Length: 484
Ligand code: 4AD
Ligand code: MG
Image 1 (cartoon, rainbow, N blue to C red):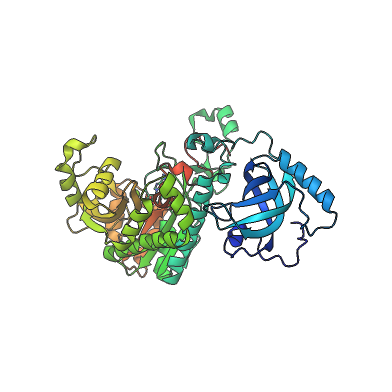
Image 2: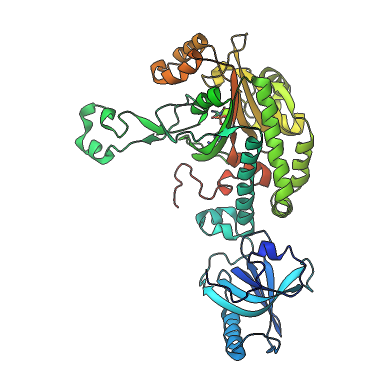
């Protein structure tokens, strides 16, 4: 960055400028032009640098001003006049001037501009209109962070990631980097992306003679995939460091084109040793509330925008969640409740089948009017590693459901009994020898332990009110979607 000519430069991000009482401080604004308005004697340039939601208005007097402190006054004025007359939305600029009280309503400060320099022009800039549809903006995902909505989403997302680390660090959870490439199917669901350096085209060309490719010759000497969850590895560290969490990208090759599924999404997964399902539920509730409280305290301006333009009433709704106790309900009771209202649903609720999105909405929005933790699901609809209840039919699972979204957290107490776990894996047709290291945790110093995964992108949806998960991650990955 070019060196400033001002020695008394106090602030250089709009965010910081707006914090000060405007008292004529010299400032240099660097950012992107949102709008330009011309009056008879004045030109207003609204500049945004993304450091906060608000931009700053820079007012230029068209009549020559004699107060200017610069040498070469005329030259500067001429260049500034010319730049102002051809200035376009989207261009990057550097503006020098003074921070002054603003006569316009709705803003405390503005910049009394003295000099403007065009840094990068923006001919035929695609973001001309005040409001573009989210669908259109998805096609220019590289430019959408320059809009109000996507700038705000990006700031809130970053703040929530920080808050997640802060929450766990303060509770003595150690951050573990679990692998992205893995040979295991952590959820036993099979929706994985394969990772290989085998030459697909060559294999296809040679015809393979009906034989599967020889994965011993593949990069890792076996079949490998992108992970669907860091849980299994987190368990190995929890049974050494007591409390750990992993937070990273996870991948699912499900072809579900919904507003809450991505093929690449981020998950926060804590895992605790010597903890049962009750402890897990308490941690999940505490975690979610602390994230909401952090956003309410630190992202007020962005949330006010979402409240006004994206999801009316969201701020009050989030505040209410922070203050309320979550409703607890067993799966069996949840199904009973749903069956009483069976006529309202497209998918009829029945014990043994998974809760549909419409059921989750009903439970949170109509029954509990807030988040619900549903526990003790039938073993058939949950993953192999969950601890079996004494009834032999249900497992110690928990899902945290929220209004608007449904499932935001999924977790469980883990099966710590070696025989029971092996038996369950065999029942499900899993090759136990592939999981020898996972089973070792039940052989050597086994301990009850529990954990969960929060879908981070769903959390961002929940906090911002954005309806489509593709709009809360910079570059969404879904079936058929990997343009950028
Ligand atoms: O319920 P899930 O599948 O649980 C697990 O993966 C466990 N191994 C977590 C654990 O116990 N450590 O996924 C956890 C959460 C879901 O509740 C949901 O919020 C999110 O991850 N999620 C997705 N988010 C976006 N796109 C997808 N395709 C998602 N699948 C799950
Ligand atoms: Mg789940």
